[in-house]
Length: 307
Image (cartoon, rainbow, N blue to C red; front, side, top):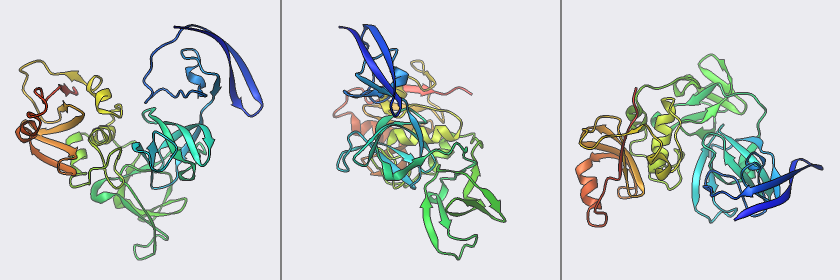
């Protein structure tokens, strides 16, 4: 099928740019390509046809976290989660919902606009450590002062120190609960272990719960390795495929039908899973045994990130 048409780009109110598009249409992954029937990201204009285009406006998550949904209704399933201070690029706002994509992995969806505020351009200075479930936000630089909120692990904040506390726009975080935003961990197994016992939450990335691919994404991000959001996307892009017969080692990433986990040693899988409904470490052999009755090939891919 060929597309040959003219579309309008709305980059600013009352500011229209006309584009003339021609050529073949292309298949795309709707999870990471911001195109609706009526509107698309202007960054896609050279590749995909849409009757209208919009330029993305940068926002950040102002709530402790926000669920990103596939449709603009509270009852729709989560597709992912953004954490406090993470960016979300907005293409359209209507009926209380912002449509756009997550800044860190380009995942597309809808977020309640009340959970966002316009990005003021100031970069985050620190991130919340995930150990212990995140950090408490106090109303004053005093551990006895009333609480304002709890921020999840890996939330991003901007502030300056007042003695033992980082002062941010709406409260104070004790310095034991934060690290410089540029601080990189060296072991994603240890990073993932900080989430042991956390409930399994479909679409979660660490606030209230986490899912299997969210655990992998968050753990690797703490080590400076950016990866895609969903299991199938990760399976073909993380590191390199292990050769047949190559033994497993600590830190290897294993894929199963619709699932992913991290090897904490050659025999043990660390994963967020719906069987135990939490993040656990268990023998890989047990995971395989559970899958064999319904999946003749339980392990679909084995990947390794080289130093």
